[in-house]
Image (cartoon, rainbow, N blue to C red; front, side):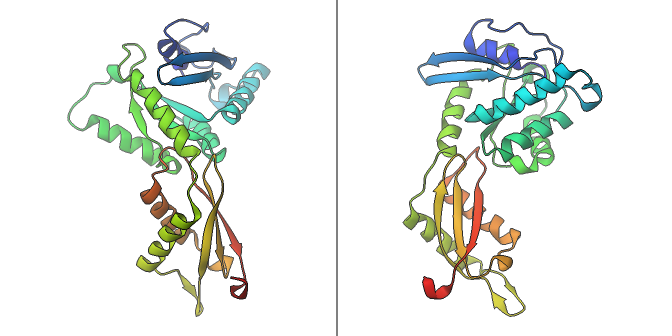
Length: 256
């Protein structure tokens, strides 16, 4: 993906990396320390990744590995999309890696100044992004221009917010109140006369927020109902920009 280093340089206010406009030519992951009134940050400018058909040299394979390692080291991943190209297959691959790694994600659309706009252009573009990256429906989208600096200053508040959401811890009592209200609105599913019973839930970890839900039968806990509960949790607590994980465990009713 091109343009990443120019964005980092615009944020830092100086040139800290030797870069090219051609995707794939910035091969090293470069760490840049930065501090402003919003906080202290380490920006990891990852290597550009070419399409699979062009990944012939071992150095390009190494670039991919470095990018995946950079994702693991990050708290928040800025998923940079070129406004002229839209979401590419490689964008989707890297976005999927960030999602699976449980990282906070912000979708940043760069070169927005180069797009010819009419009424609804921004909304249409955002809809197309979420259609191609359905698993990132929770990720906020920010339209910027690294060249002009348009909206770049808004990144820091968004980075801080998403980092906080990714590390959010919910009290057990409030969580179960939300779960019980959700159950009251939409009853758990049944199968062959057996109904799913949800006993209680607790948060086991953060980064990303991970919830353990105790039930009578794991097989009755359908994905559609899990998605419903996650949506209700998001509705109550926000959890903007972060994936939410659910672990389902069986428990005997007599032990409750």
